[in-house]
Image (cartoon, rainbow, N blue to C red):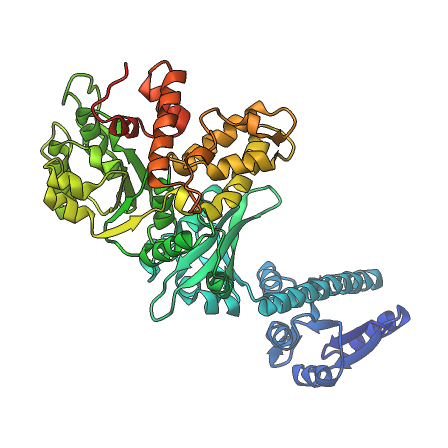
Length: 569
C-alpha cells in the first residue's frame, strides 16, 4: 500500500521543518513548497493526498491557491493554516472546498488529527467517485433511454440513448407543465405527470409514438420514484425502451393469435387485425357490423387503444339499453329541472369523451329524433344539453356498431339516409364464428384458462365427444354464446374434465341435418337448427324471450326477428 503523501505550502522555513518532522514520524511522505508556483509544479508529477497551505503566501493567498488546487485535482484535500483566524475567511475556505481550517500555533496532535481526517475524507470521495464513474459507464452503455427528473418535472440528467429514442422528450422536459413543450402526440405525458404527482411507479407498454420527421416508434415507458431517507419523493426516473423492431417482427408473423383482446389466428381475423392497425390513427368515423356476439366492442377498444387517442377517455354507450329520453340525457347531458327527476346537472357521454373516443353500440336501434341529433354532432361536433341552450363543442372520434343491415333499414325508411352515409365512412365487418371455426381451439383454450382461474379449479380439459359437439354447432350467438356455454360446462363439471354431458341441451348434434355430399351443414340445416335452439331456450325459460336470449348468448331482438310475426307469451 502506498504511504500517504502530504504537501506543505508555507513561506516560513520553521513551519515547513516542524510539520515535516511531525508528519514523517507518523509515516507520511512529505514534500514542501515556499510558493504557489512551486506547489503546482510539485503536484504535476507527484500524487499528493493532503496539502497544508498557509493563508499568506506573499503576493498570492492560500485561498487563491485552494481554488487552483481543487481545479487541478478535485480529490486533493486542502487544509488552510492561518495566524490570524477570521470567521469570514474560514467560511469562504470551506465553501471553496477546504476540508479543514487550522489556527497557529498548531500542536502536533492537532496536525495529525487534521491529516487523519483529511485522509478519511479523501477515501470516501474516491469511493464515491468510483461509484459515480461506474454508474456513468452503465448509464452510457444502456440501450434503454434513462431520464431523471426532479419533483417538479425539471430534467436533471438523460443518457444518449434517451435522446435517440425520444429526442422530443429528452430536450423538452424542462418545466413542470409538460403539455406545451412536447412537439409530438405526448402519449407518455400522462404517465409521467401521474408519477410526479403521486410519487408512485407506473408503466405503459407499447406506446405508438409519432414524432416530427421520424417514423412511428413503439416504446414501453416505466417510471420509478426516487425517495430520500424520510421516504419523500424527490423525483422520478423514466426508462424508455424502444420496441419498434420487435413490434415490426411480430407484425411480420403471418398468423397472429390475437390482437388486443381479440382472439383468433384465422385468415378472416388476420385481415381484421391489419385493418384495425391501418385505421387506429385515422380520425374518421368507423361503423362496425356483424352478428351479435362477434366482438364488436372489442374491435372498438382495439381501434382506440392502438390509436393516438389512447391516453384519452374511451366511453361506451349501449343505445338499445335506454329509452329515447334517457339516451338523449346520457349522450348529451341535462341541466337541473330539465325533466322530472333531473335533480342536478349531468355531464353527457359526449362531453366525457372529449379528446378521446365514444363507442355507440346498437346504433341501428335509435329513434328518428335521436338520429337527427346525432347527425348534428357528426357534422358540427357540437350539441346542447337537455334543457339548456348553451352549445358545447367536442373533439371525439365516433365508432358505432350494429348487428342490423342499416342499408336495408334505410330502404325501409327506418333509418336516415344522411346519417347512414355519415356513419358508414369506414366499415369493418366481423366474421361470425361459423366462418372462422379454425379459431375454435384458440378460443376454447382462452376461455377454459380464464374459467379455471375465476372458478379456482385446476386446468380444465375437454373430451373428444364434447369437442365434436362444439364443432358441429352453428353458433348463432357466436363467441359470446361459446363463452356462456363453456362457463356453464365449467361450473357443472366437478372433475376438471368437460364431457358432452356437461354441455347445454340445446347443443344437439347436426348429423341428421348435414348434407353428406358437403363438408358442413346446409343453410337450411343451420336455419332449422337455429329454430330448434330458440324453441328449446323458450321452453326452458317458460316463454320469456329475455331469459331465452341470455341462455343462448344472443340479443333479445334476434329472437324477435327470427320469430317474425310469431309471438310466444
